[in-house]
Length: 346
Image: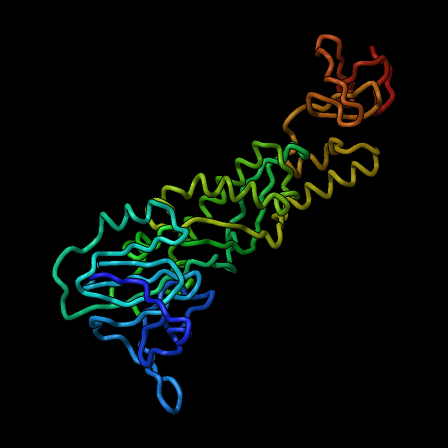
């Protein structure tokens, strides 16, 4: 049982216009991943649509762009086609496997799951959506932990946005995701199944971005990097087991928890007061934010107060501790006077 591509003569024109009865996909929009085929019967008062019960020799099938048609017999896949056009079913034909632009892995999947028995009395036609499925929403219910090198502190962030996917191995998707005897599969079904996995992978991707030194406030502009990290974690679960992959992600907003927001405000306020990018907070503020107490501050020759290994203003390296002294106010200095209180080195 297989399909062959039909042709129309130059005189008679389009086949779809000639056929009085043929099979097309039921409603398929950006929210539909899979739907059954329906039979179209041309009449004087317009087209009539009915569910396909059986497929006989010579049945006509019309496949639209970005669709894959699956022909089933007794619930088993006997042929498929991912090339736009008009086709006819012939019970004596071998499977055609019109692969279109799909990878060779799809043919490998077919060889594994194909049905080789005699045609039964129950044939069905299904159509899968090969377009990029956009607008799948996500949101982090719990804050994600993010170490921001700019603030040298752990921040806790929330983010929400949308992501898009594409079915890359439709036969595997049909076998592993589509419920048996389902009339259609919507994006909601897939979202419910994959959202938790997506959020777990997002935490791993965000942690990798933190290791790369990306500021938390810049995550929204690093969508392609996040997609790359997400795919590296989701490939085994999504692509290899379900035949789908992540295409893009759009982060709509990044927000911080109350403690992280207060920490950022203190740092920004100190920056304005001391006229340097990052300044160690006053002791009273430090008590309220233990995440800030990561390193002792040190004074650079340019007069700025720092806590990292390099000066945030002039770039000088932190001096050897053997040449440093700690003032009674708690600041570590290298010169003869404290850059905070002005006290002379004793």
